[in-house]
Length: 264
Image 1 (tube, rainbow, N blue to C red):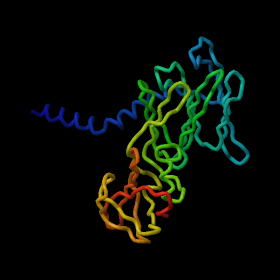
Image 2: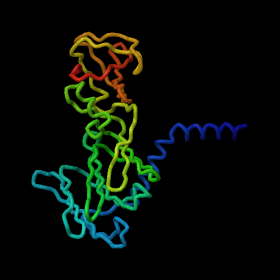
Image 3: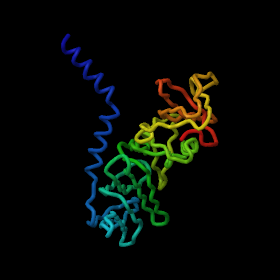
Image 4: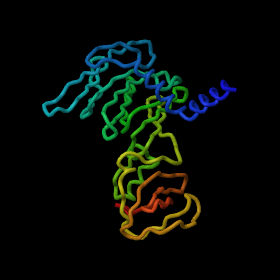
């Protein structure tokens, strides 16, 4: 009986923490592929049978900014500027596209994390910059998971910032598919806000109807000009676009996306 209870508890803990455990395993595995800056390596990046000479040359400028110059076959391919704590990896994010990516991460807290994915091709090399910290990857389908992300890097949700007058919105996670020298957006209907966006109080600039759900037109309550709310999540599916808020009384509801600024 005791063994059954213990097994049940362990199973529940694993189930409830599956995502977190999976992230730990990925980051542990990624660390095995870390390269040293200012050291030369030879890898076949595009599986054409030829080894590329790779080096990330890093230094500090006079004003203490960090710079990383990525050289492939002694040719400068990309310059990374302004990032702290540069880390350099070679990793195969998608097992089916026959390309090994170079990953350069920087930052030391949620305000300045940045993930760069560089894909080498003799005719068409690309670098993709994503705000946030790389925390997971499903290599079977090439989808990466980035924490401390932003709507700036999500075409699905980038228009949501207009409700705040153009201010970008911090979101919990951003998902991207890495495939054949491209980084594509993975569609998610709803994302939670995070960071400064989650903590900040926004003031209604006009009277705003708040709905019970993100489907239908059942009114939950009305915000008067000057009322304060906090953002909780963003929802986008076909023509339906809403922002989930909670007011000062703790009441939740959904605001339809508008073309003008209604919160400040």
